[in-house]
Image (tube, rainbow, N blue to C red; front, side):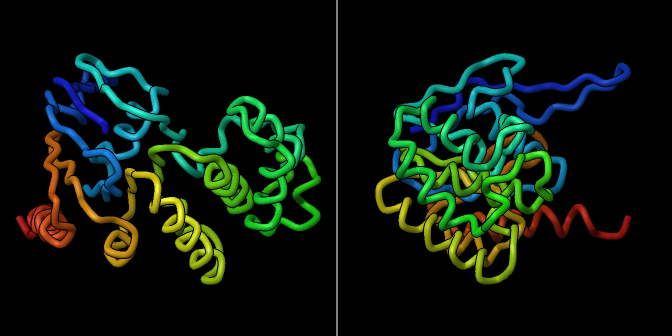
Length: 223
């Protein structure tokens, strides 16, 4: 369960205010895979960061039960001079999991081959995302936060990512940011639409997608 209580987030830049969360009061039920929809810049990634606890709301709070992952695919905490394997072991120790099992899973899943033993700073952006996704999926969380990461890599890797994700969803929930509606339909069993600071939850995936597409059509309509 993730509950938003009067959640507000306002950014201020050069005297201009941008509200991405406007007094949100809403609950994501336990065990649901929620597709988080909204236009570019609506604040979806910001909302994920607040759920993860890495970004502080302007006011209000988020209450949750169970363990919540960092935003899956986020590689900002990996040490650049450590190898992929060493970074994986370090994260495994932090979360108290079997580090040998985690390394074996990530090495097989990410498909980095010899780069897995090379410094993280030598990785391309795609390789960094593959490592981060593998580490995230290799640790059992009650809720996974996913931000477009399954778009990384070739078709075979994307398919493998979706399969692993669906396996995790048998025992966990998720909040998934994706601009691909087919992917939302594949991965999610509920949706939430973030529009002009307001968040609306839909038990029916297609209903949420329809509302999101209506919002996008209005934004793109000639003026």
